[in-house]
Length: 194
Image (cartoon, rainbow, N blue to C red; front, top):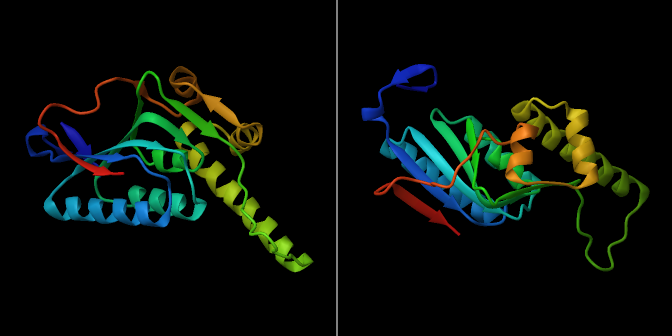
């Protein structure tokens, strides 16, 4: 028996969909991910496995995806199938069970922003940007802390240091529950988001 929202669900009634998410964390990819998931939930999927390999991207869209996934009335697992870098770790943390292939990696680092050439900042604008960066750092550290059992200070330190973890190190860190090669069984429904 599996549990969905605290209710026992027999394996016979479990409807599982696998989503291959190999994309940066940007508006288009996350909107596509969320729409595909809503379609599957409306179709009757009650368990979702996200096979993820992503270089990261937008903090805004990463946190949006995390909150969306955590708020769904279904079980979600995540599986690193290559590299889960930067804010993609936040999306990865949405999994109740988190897996990694044996040759995967995880990268945590601080947050920043790009500045178009010729951009001028006054003190107020620069202060707003700094406050926003600090809030992004706190939100990311909060998500990772909540899902690994590490303190937010430990996570912030790992981010400042630009920490790279292999799967074994990620297990010790509390990020990964199990290292496994098999991604999905034969005949499984797999939706690509590339």
